[in-house]
Image (cartoon, rainbow, N blue to C red; front, side, top):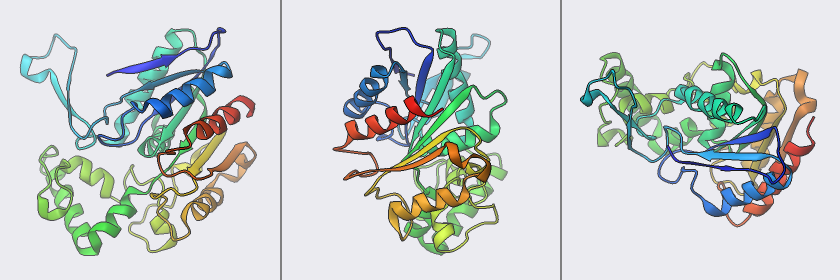
Length: 295
């Protein structure tokens, strides 16, 4: 998968990893935003690695480099429509290993949108976590968003169909159009829609409107025990709460592990949407400044 490594002029041991969001708009290629982050971080002597992970594009066929596999087995169906969020552990561990092989020893993990969900999923699954700081940018509630868009009946219908296909060992079958989840695969639809699953890490809708599952609210987030920045554009259209981003930040504060509140920060970027469009430099400066000065 393609990627870019930005290095400061001075040799450094510090490096930040960027995790993009979902779909065709969720690639690491966003020259203005990525270059703004690269500039702001390298100016503070922090290297910056941005790369496409297995969730890049809606659908993507990837080649597996393994001579022991037959030719027909050397392709992997990736992209948002086939991704399982728990597989982010492999991507993040791979990025961390790459950086450590190149002399970086203090690593930070920055996740935007679904990338923020992946940080929480990674935190509770990584067997050897090399990360010392997290940045959760534009964290979203996809489960709540799809529930609101599909309505109670279609949401439950889609969830049941996806669950059934996974149980039948047909996880790659595409969801029917009537479910509202076409062209997601059954495994990815179930991953996203299951309120008790690994994907549902920021349940804004459940915390402010109605419960959809039994999983404790912000279960993964509340286990985070390293310095963390939670940051939104103040007009983020996917901060799925009645109170918008202000309420979203309140929910994060409420569910932060009380032992570590001193090392957490909660910030807004003025006049910015979910992707921080028009405010890339301001977003980058806030992130870089926090990473530079947080112990």
